[in-house]
Length: 276
Image: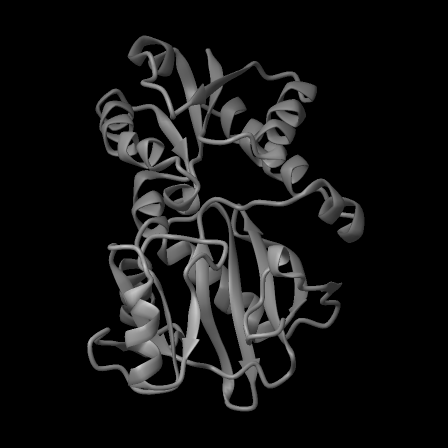
């Protein structure tokens, strides 16, 4: 029996995870979900790691996302363990679903608005997406109309704009119920924060304990064993603005942080595999 990794693009992180798992003595099979996977090959795995990103829909890889429900049904029917489990994937692909779950569990998130009549300013973004694709801060109805006219015909959400008063977004990584990494990611021109937009990173050495416990609690509610969370802090408190059940990292980030996220994810994966 082996460990299977579901992926949909040639991300450095996917193959780094594979190599770290192999280095720990466990066999690995890679399944490119841009193609139909062989059911028997999938079922030959004792453990599956899901690396299909919600952002696949904006990178021409929506077919991989479309294959996930059938893959999840097959694995569930045959009792094959998946990291992260099915619930986490369905939160990954719907920001509305994840935010409503967090709200129901008393966790701090921006208010959700009716996309047709939000309060301004607000943040408008795809319900299923990532990497700030088609994400904008909107200040008026006129801006919203202009933005939506050029947007793809997919489901969007509008949420309360939380001002990042301290000039950064907090990114945390949680693995197996432990907060393993916290960084500050700077705000770029336009008010957004993202690696590909040019945000700079700084290790967050004094992350408040309240944020640590909140992040772990939120991940638990969303059934995410290994994932990331973006948080905005200001004078009124802190707010979860995004949660991902598939964490991504680049090789240069690994060098910068002196922390190998894929190595630590591999250690968690192999630990689960060894106890099956």
